[in-house]
Every structure is written in structure tokens, then in C-alpha cells.
Length: 368
Image (cartoon, rainbow, N blue to C red; front, side, top):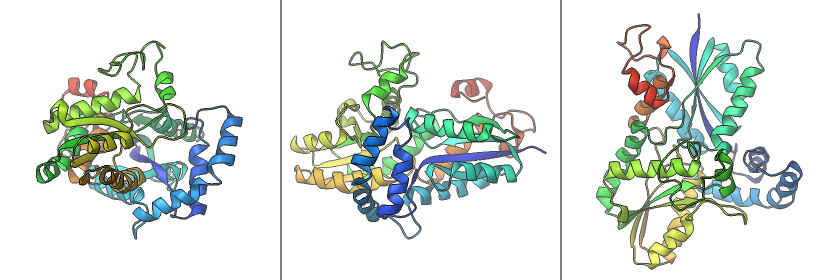
């Protein structure tokens, strides 16, 4: 009998907030040619001469500030999400995996195989597509699945950057906080990427970053552009929250190195806003479905310090989706949309063998 598995995947975290485990994690992460997309010799030299000798100690100190008694927040929230999805998808075997580190993708696939799951829904916890996150994750999953004699059928939850359930989940978390704190301005801070990644995603070679409004709408040329999808998320979320254009700014964080990254940069924007008189600032991080180093330490600590040093008074980090019940409901629905027709993922009460919901909605969502 064929069973259905759900593989929930996030990027990863070191096993402990110490230089040794952090070094192992960074070596695996940054040695990925989709992450540092330069020639292998250049990547080897950059990693071993400039990053690994120095960055693990600094990163370990940052991880120590956010580490919980249960472990890395990213892993803790991932486990809670999986625990919440299991009763919402009672016919499925749901497993958590990380692209880098533990629990690993090969181990999770083996657990699904042992449970008899010959059909697997892959659920990347990255709302917007990037070759360095979604692309890298899928490449490894496809490779690992293909290496097995009994290769499972795979269905992938497509990027859900403007899916109503995703957007409304962030709004449900953020709206009460905005009403309570009444910020002067709102930042939507997305993880940054080098500009060359946007250019490589443009198969036409004549759209991405060629003009100021290249990301104003999603079309054929920029359908896989991370920046365009981030701006689509921002448009949908601010509309849901009822924010006028002068109430928010979209920006990008976590840049590294000297090459141009997508702009504007979060650290510069929040200082400028403080200098212009903004006293209360709220920050959403809608590229992250779970709180992690980039939200809790980079925004929740460093950005708070920088904002106050520049004259601001209060910076509020809006929590990520984590394992909020509204998000767990929306996530389960994304899985069902993707596997529509697989009877063991249908909600209770749906006729066996019949897809629940409107077929036009399925087509619009990208579900198969």
C-alpha cells in the first residue's frame, strides 16, 4: 500500500553555539556552489583563507545570544511546526529536515522510506524562490531520491510568496502588535542576495535590474527572481495590513562581501529613518518562516542598538510564523494543494478519490 510523506525543509543550524560546530556548519553551507557561486578554486580560497579562520568564533557568539534550552530556535520551531502538521495531515508521515546540518535530508528520506512513503510532498520553508535556498534544497533532494532503487514520486510546494494563507498568517501575527505599539513606520526586511543572483535568474537576459521598476510585477522574465517575489510579498502583506505606501519601506539584510547586493540595505535604512525623526519602528522579516539568527540577533538585537544609537526609541521585531496555529493551518493547506488527488492528504470529510475544492483555484495556486 502506498503512503504519502511530507518532507518539511529549512536551511539549517549548527548543532551547538560553539566555534567547532559552527565551523562545520559554515563549511557545508558556504561550500555549496549555489551559495557562493564562484569558481571552485576561488570558493576554496575564500572559504579557507578568509571565512573559516575568523567567522566561526564571531557567529558562535551570536548564536549563544539566541540559543534556547531546547536548542537552536530554527530547529525548535521546525519541530513544533511538524508536530502541528501531523494531526492536520492525519494520513501522512511528516518529517523535518535541514539542507545543511541535522536533521539531514538523507536521514529524513530514509525515515519516510521506512514508513512506506512512496509519494513525498516536499515543503521548503522558503516563501520566495532563490537558487541558493530553494534551488539548492531541491537539487539535493532530487539527487538523494534518484539514488534509491525504489525512487519515490515527488511533488514540491511551489513558492508561496503571495499565497493568501501565507500572507494572512503574517498579518494575523503582526496586526495586533501594530495596533498595540502604533509604530511611526514599518520595515519589511528580507534576506539579501548578491545582485548577480537576480541577473542569473533572468533567462531573457534583458529584464532584471535593467530599470528601476523591473520588479513592479511578476512576468515571464522575472518569474524566478527572488527580489521580484519579495516585493510581491510586500505588496500583498501591506495591502492586508492596510498600510499606505508612505508607512512602510522594503529593504534587504545580511549582506556580505564587497560585491553589490540587492538594495536598499536594512542597516542603512533604519539608521536613516531614525535620523529623519522616526521614533518607533516595527520590522517584519517575511523571507523567514521561523525565527532564527537573522531575525532574533541581527534585527532583534543589533538593529535595535543601531536604531537607538541613531536617535530612534523603539524597534519592534514582529515574530515570524514559527508554529502559530494560523500558519499551521495554512501550511497544511499548501501541502494539500500540492498533492491534490492523493487521497491520504485530503481533509476529513472529503470524498475519497475526489479533489477537495475548486479546480480553477488549484490551477492558479500551481498545485498538481
